[in-house]
Image (cartoon, rainbow, N blue to C red):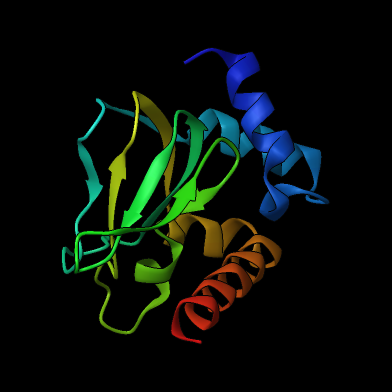
Length: 136
């Protein structure tokens, strides 16, 4: 993954705005990259979340409801996987598929908990907003 591409995704992400630049640099360096082909599942509903969440660095992701219909599209600079990671069941709550070739950076929530309670709080806020939006 290209560092400029990663920096661009971070600059678009509301969750990372206002964080200590040293923490952002550490996150950039410690993120685990993954790539997905068009149509490939990134997360499947019901799978163990494994405590991970990710940032979309390039491409587009579609959130697929049980009915098979796309209910949301997520792009560069958006966080994915945070809802399943904070849920008590620890499972993915929706299926996410790459709509085009997509690259993400993944982190483990436990590492974030130790390094930045502020970032953890922002991730939890995002998860609750998404839960509220989908259930209204």
